[in-house]
Length: 112
Image (cartoon, rainbow, N blue to C red; front, side, top):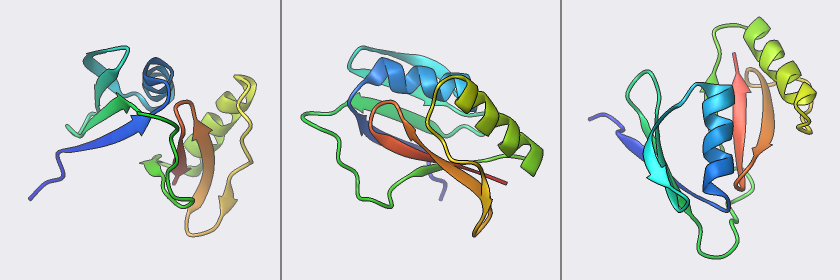
């Protein structure tokens, strides 16, 4: 059995989709202001749907993107900082990782 798709409720579908396309190389597969479908190079579909009301995921909820090495983690962290995102530097915890609050109301982990 293979995980085929994940659906996230978000407060701003276009902003969340643009963020995932720009920084995580997700490919748009259609949608509108209320929903978007993105696919990664492995075939996972991430659907984004406009939340009814405010978005409130549990405190530890997040999605994660693995990078090939620490240099890629550092480069993405720096790019996000330069683009105005409030992001802490990567740290060695369970992996070399950092977290970022994504537009739309969810958290993304970046790790190597």
